[in-house]
Amino acid sequence: MKKSIVFSLVLAFALILSACAQSAGSSQKTQTLTVGASAVPHAQILKQAVPLLKKKGINLKVKVFQDYVLPNQALASKQLDANYFQHVPFLDLYNKQHNTDLVNAGKIHIEPFGIYSNKYKKIADIKDGATVQISNNKSEQGRILLLLQSKGLLKIKSGVDPISATLKDINNFKHLKFLQPIDPALLPKAYENSAADLFAINTNFALQANLQPKKDALILEGASSPYANIIAVRKGDQNKKAIKELVHVLQSKEIQSFINKKYKGAVLPVSE
Image (cartoon, rainbow, N blue to C red; front, side):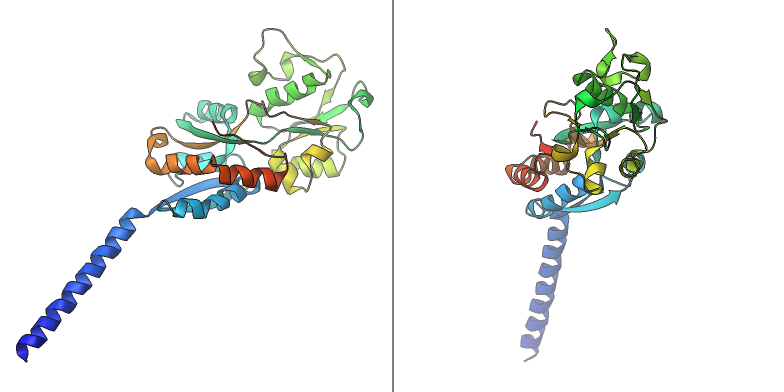
């Protein structure tokens, strides 16, 4: 009788140890990635990746930011494992200005930049001296100038790299008046108030303001743009397995299909 009781206790203890070991092994296999992102479309795209990454043992947590400064600060200070909101020219400028070493882990999508107007419906109608409202994001100036140049509204001077071009690097033959740059998030409101004739608005902010880039933009960037949005990480982390899995999933056919269906050309997937 005593032997039976002892055997039962030993068996129960062994089962408890086995369960604990299995639990510990399970927790070790699951890894959490915290990724900072703009609300639209970045966070929406990441949420579609959650179940796909879960199958790979990765618990994806998405932290939404409303500006273009805090996500890189949080990444550099190790509050995030990665962020998803910016393109390479913006990242390069941030690294230069803040002496950081953040890198591109992979391209995910392009948000075609748009020029919007409540006043003009056709490019040909734009008059000399039209006012233009741009953002204070210096890394976007070349992008905006390229868009305006594509429709013959100005010309970037010969020998100037278009990506790094500024307002000082143009032949402004239509005498466009560039207003004081403002925060990118304020551009949709300025557009609603018709504070200028032309507005250069980032697609993520345009979408939040219920604008439809393909329908509402007077000028819209094409798919060949060099401004693809990326997964950014601290230098060296781009080689980590979990980060590679994140990029792989975001470049997968499932996510590409979601992007095409959800945004109808306002966001274009990239699989490089």
